[in-house]
Image (cartoon, rainbow, N blue to C red; front, side):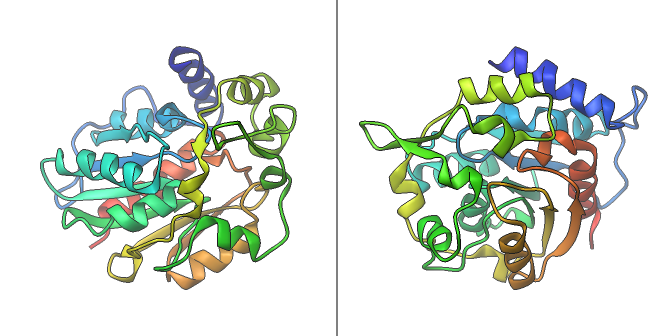
Length: 256
C-alpha cells in the first residue's frame, strides 16, 4: 500500500505545485524544525506522504505517527512516543480523528503549536460519537459500517466520492480497498485533555468536506481560536492540497 499510495500522492502534490527540486535545506533561526503528523481513521501514516515530502525538502524533520487505531489511549501513546523521540520543540499536526489525538498528546511539554487539518477538536469530556450525533450525518459518516469485532470502515462504494472526491478516482478506490479499520471504542472515548486551551492553534478548513461538515469545522476552529486557512478541498485535502497544508504547518513552525 505504501509504495502505490506514495506515488499517487506525490503525483497529486506535483500537480498542485509542491516544493521545487532545489528547495532550501536550512531553516531560518528560531523555526521549529520537528513536525509530527498524526493521521485519521480508516487510513495510515502514508496519507501524509505528500505533505511530508514538501516539508522534508525544506529542511524539516518530519515524523508520521503510525496510529494503531485500537483506542484513543493507544493512539495518544503512539503519538507521545513520537514526540518524546524528537530533539527539541514540536509542531503537532492532526487530520480528522487525529485532531482528537493531538488535543490529548498536545499537552506534552515539547509541543509548541497545534495544526488541525479537517479535524475534530473536542473539549474535555467530548467524544467523536457525541459530537457526530449532535448534527445530521454527512455522506461519509452515514456510510460507516462495523464489522463483527466492532471495528469500523467506510462503505468502499461510497468512500471515493465522500472522502476523496477531489483526488483521481483510482486513488480513492485504492484507499477504499485498503482501509485501516478503527475500533468503535475510540470514537466513544471522551477527551481527557484539550491542549488547544494552552497551545497556539492553526486550522485548515476543507470547504467541500463530505465527512466532517465544514460548518462543524468552522465551529471547532472558532472555539479553539485558531488561525484559519480555507481550502477548496475534500476530506482528503491533506493530499489534494498538500502544498497549502504544508504552508500552514510552516507558518506554525515560524510563529513567535
